[in-house]
Image 1 (cartoon, rainbow, N blue to C red):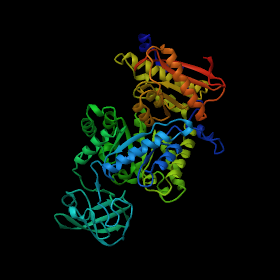
Image 2: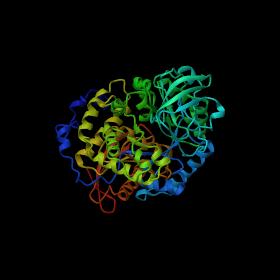
Image 3: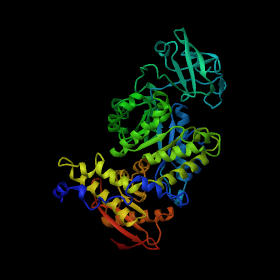
Image 4: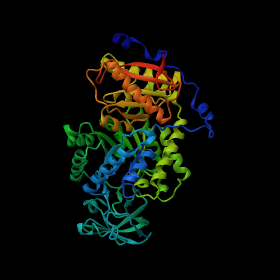
Length: 553
């Protein structure tokens, strides 16, 4: 059987059907604003948790509205603050019942990274009060520690001690994603610069600082980052959003810090500057996923080129089967308004159409006035965008050109990898051909579900696993809906009985989610024995009104 798989020309397999529409242009003419929206959303929503959203009741409502991953921004707050927030998220996840199911919610630690930030405002501390910087006024940029909590309209503290040495007169300092900019007028002393405000605005505490005209010599991991990562290990986080990754060795430094105890934690590299973009291929290989962090990126490279970087990185991740997250200012106006701008709605939709597995909210949910409404809006936009996704064309393309697709397997590829990949493609192909309501995947490590997500089936992937960590991390992959099967494995029970129990569990969950009904067809992907590496079976079955299977194909 294995030899046969090696010798078949996969491009000519019967499963490699041409898409139903001849091209994307024809596909787009078939789109309709009057079509019924999808009842389910494949794209995960990441919410940054802050003062506006860290209460248990608010978190519960956010989960029920669609939050899949809770992001802790370690550029702000103390370890005690984040520990309390993490406890609140877990309590809310135990209480929330979207679709009547308990939803695993992942926790992400976003590192401060080798970034530069301002200090605290005199009046605001760690809060979100602001002071106004007026265009044309003079202001001092200081690295003196005593100015850390004294930021205001006359002086700004920055935490990069070498800024005085690397900045030249006439160069610009950008603050808060470039919303404000200062021009260096003179070096006042060894600890401060005299600057002029070129573009004014409202300055808050701990805002990011960019120096695109200078070469910044910061290490990949600071002592604070190492301390934060070790704290995250203690808190049993699920993933790290690693800030300002510039090369593969930066990812290796994080892996070394995590050690054996943290090898299961997913590392998502945030690409935020020119060096990271230049080294994107090696970073994708070293990482578990990529975040397109457009805030700092839009200052480090011309803003009109950010969309090119987003599309390029999304496509590279799609081909590699690595999750990609699109972030920054996605629904920014909803921080203060109950509705987004039309441009923001289009931005979210286009991120989905570019191939994003997840979309992220930052200040909208951390400090905004409408966190719940923002998540609901994000969910609605994603569902509409997914309905416009040219699924059949993508499936055809990814099989033909994907870097790990069957067309690229060779005699050095392990047999279980070939069989698992072939099973995955067969299941997705069957789901298209038979119009399946969902694909049920029974998995130990999540590998089969991740492979399936790469092919972007229209049918949602119900991922049944007994591993809580695997369940939470599955949110990173598009279309994957983790279902934690909490009944322990009874070694005395025949293997197929255990399989049937888990499939029935998934069908019941699918019925509560509104995606499985009477006469629905479902594709079921299983293994021939327990444990990873055994997936080799696809069945397509019809469900009766009681949730039982009445016909196999």
